[in-house]
Amino acid sequence: MMPEITFVDFAGNETKVDVPIGTSLMQAAMENMVEGIEAECGGSGSCATCHCYLTADWQGKIAAPDTSESDMLEMVSEPTDLSRLSCQVLVSDEHHGLQVHLPESQY
Image 1 (tube, one colour):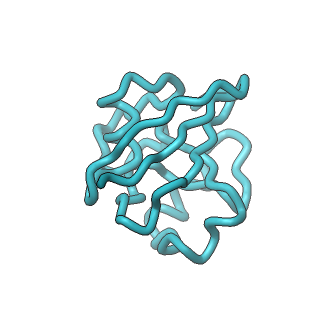
Image 2 (cartoon, helix red, strand yellow; image 1 turned 90 degrees about the vertical axis):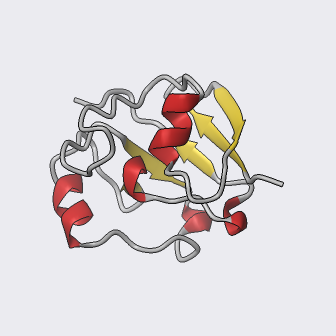
């Protein structure tokens, strides 16, 4: 069974997708035509156009951002403590039910 991840756009519309383990949230969004993630660098963590917000209940259940990701998150529009680059979060079987909220804009 693949974990089900829910992407929530800025307007509150939800897209639920089954995501293979080891897939990044960015990849899952792109492969399932989820709007709101640009992913201009293709997942290398160098552009921050895959910015998303994880919900507070998932804090501590997903590895914290490394230094490179934290540096890139400083460049996103409207960062919060829940901000992540979706290309840097790899789905595991424990992530079933994760909600990923998308910002109004990636720029």
